[in-house]
Length: 449
Image (tube, rainbow, N blue to C red; front, side, top):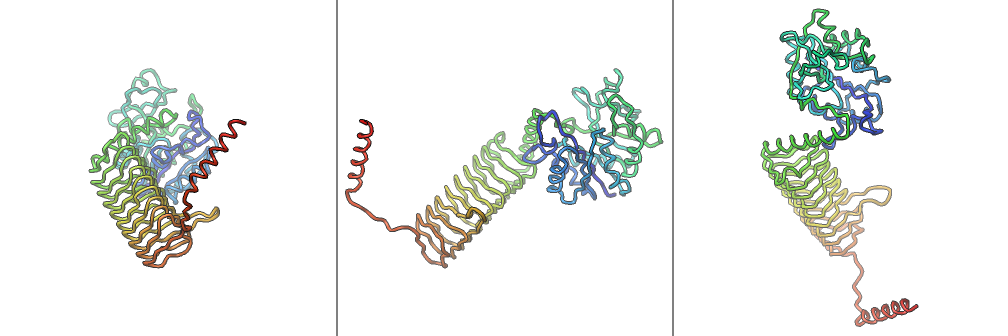
């Protein structure tokens, strides 16, 4: 059956003490909202509706950056979770199949857990995700009737006996789209907070003879982010899980606690990651590649057998083919390095294509920006770029060509040619001593004055 997602992302998150919508604060280099969307991606949802409120324009932009088909609805007033879900009714009330309600500030729900909820729908009209809390605190309580869920009681409205229950509500709910919106339409705000609670649909369903059930997950999956401290705790938890998963998948981490992953980092088996490596979004490291210590990578692809670093930076659009070597203090941006290219040290390559087995000398810079527009540098196969070469784009260096050290290359270099673009050295014997004596005399005169 098709699945529709409803992701609640309307809250400001006042306890974050921020102008930014809470769901756009980043965890593992990605907005919290993207974590919720990523968890549900395995379900191959037919529709994804994000309920936005505070900062709706920015939330919509972020949601569509992750999934361009995401649909956005607006919750102008914050009248509770039931009211938020109701905003999706015009889009989904007649949708076939299942509907799952997720929260944009709850990043750790696993795809396997959502699949278990869909399976439980074979037995129950409404399925709620619950967890056994070590400290139930102010969570809503799940009140069971045998194997079924009788009702959900918010902490504010719970009796002492109900507050003693440790089975708590995560807020994640699954039902058919038809049942969900039929039940939401009949919610009341007759409660201590004066809000429309989504959780009240359980009691409404039972009153209509529909069954409700619970799927229980680990408490860690239900962690919600409400404060900066909780965001920091979530970051630590995400990194712990990501490191453990990488090690389990055959990746060598020489100092695991110092490596930081992004939400979408992919690293192949037998790759080696050194200490203090940071992965931004959009990085793929293929098998048997090595990233040495103190590197920062974002939007980059590193192929099998390549090695990078230490102290290198790969920026978006960096494409390294097999057996490429990128050494220390090298920065690469929007550049393709073909097989076997060597860029040893102290170099910037931006907006460039470097042919296979070319050697780039130390201190080389592709001068790609003229103050208004970016321009591209193309270097052919098996070329040799001498140290401290400035390549003023747009410029092409042909296959097998060579540039002299210290050259400023402003014109295309034909294949197999040598290009030298520097002034002829002039040597003045004895002039150094005369200049230094003159300068010392000037300094002494100033000090006396």
